[in-house]
Amino acid sequence: MPLSSPEYLLCFLPIIVAVTVLFRRSGHLRAAMQWLVLASLFFYGYARPVALIILFASVIFNYFCGTQITKKQKSWLAVGIIGNLLLLGTFKYATFFAGMIGVQEKLPSLVLPLAISFYTFTQIAYLVDASRGNAKAHSFVDYLLFVTFFPNLLAGPIARHSELAPQFTKKPSPGVSPDLAIGMTMLIIGLFKKVVIADTIATYANLVFNGATSGMVPTFAEAWIGALAYTMQLYFDFSGYSDMAIGSARMMGFVLPVNFNAPYRSLSIREFWKRWHMTLSRFIQEYLYIPLGGSRKGEVRTLVNLLVTMLLAGLWHGAGWTFVIWGGLHGVYLVINRIWTKMGMKLNGILALPLTLLSIVVGWVFFRADSLTTAMTMLQSMAGLNGMHWTLTGSSLATPLVWWRAGQMLIALAVLVMVAPTTQAFLGIDDAKPDGSVLQIRWKPTVLFALCSMILAVTSITTLFLSQEHVFLYFQF
Image (cartoon, rainbow, N blue to C red):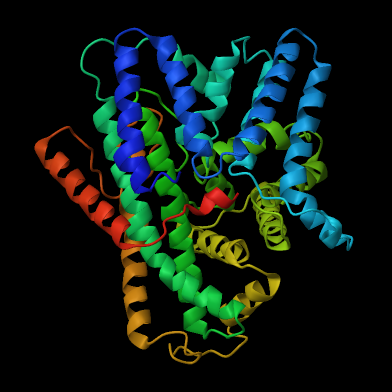
């Protein structure tokens, strides 16, 4: 059930929030947890109930491993990690690796379970935390809710057990809570980002990338508009989802970790990964990069660790060479950034920002392309190797008027991305870091802000009903 679907927004979420708040406010915390477990399982199995079998099997296996680890049976950590990787590898990577050795046709067709990467990573982190003493013993219902909690089940944020689980058993503060208003505002902002902004700019990205896939060669200008359109689509799609997930949880009184902090304002690729999908970056650093040795075993080993970490991060996003290259490209970026920094060299902010953005956009081309051929066609056109045609009619992908509208929207979105406050800064969320925004606007529970929220909500809901499909991009990962 997508968070942007009418079923979720107009039926599922209001009922779940109302009952959860009622239980928690009346002191029935255990009943609230049981209710949320049922709601989360319904949410996950709504479209494909059979996927619940795999989810349940994964949860039971990891819960058992976790209980053994908390009893100081540390050997179960290896068992748990191997089991999780085997499950993920079977459903997500078996076909890819079989294709590498030419036996793909001999494998049975497997449907990738929704969100398997996210709930697998969540549970691997839990097992490691349990081995470190950072996750204590708990009941099966507690653990089941931690893994399946519906706001962040499908695409994150990836929350630690120590961050999320204690909140379920914590009594809400007496008096009127601002959580409902803050959460609803964040949900509305996220919905607007997704259905109004991301899905609108997506039409231009799809036009160019699908054209390149079908064999058409975009002009220089078309290729850049397509690449920049996807850059904006992915930003507003995923940041919109994060807002909706965090907002949904906040409406019930639960706080999920911040996942976005104006990543396109980064002055280096290292800073970008501290701002983009922040909980995944944290996972990669704490549970992959540092265990590999981090920066503790010499400079050469550090550079190798960076490359390996990002290659695996790319492969986590998708079983295909485009994702491997995307991850490897970011690994190379981080290696160059580290060498550059070690040499004591620093770019001026005027140069650092566009250079970092250029690197990110080139990477997104591989991330979006459905094949290496499509990616190379796009990059060749962007580099002018297919001719420096500034006209917007050379490949007949669209009329000049379409590209003129696309250009206007890209300029408007670029200004919004660069100067507007982030959602968490706007709402004054405690763990939000300064984002350097030019516009310093702070939300208040006033009639004016309520009116603005209503306008955004009505616009988003209207757009939602007028369009056919609104699937979040990160659901495929």
